[in-house]
Length: 136
Image 1 (cartoon, rainbow, N blue to C red):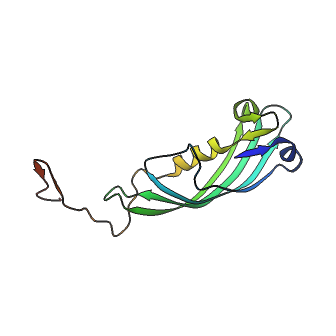
Image 2 (cartoon, rainbow, N blue to C red):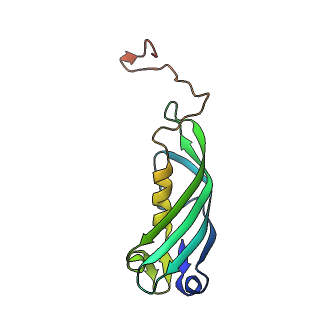
């Protein structure tokens, strides 16, 4: 997500939706990104350091840890950090910043280690030379 520095320095406000495809950003636990909305502020203190406060909301579909089925998961992430060397690290061109890495990092941190649905059940299975005799 590229932010125009000129617009950002005059308004300081963030309010945008992120494309569900998010090219280049994948994780094996995520089946689909349904919607992601970012709202917040970026405050320039006159140096390369910025105060970034945002709320990331949306809906993603995770892979069940039990049967790999879809598990809907609601995002509601609060991010409030003083980012040092913000412009140096996230500058995309002379007049824009790319904050998608920060957003993606926070989405990954929010994902539970083990996602399941209430009605997920372990499917007994067998393979080449093995079988599950008892699920417990």
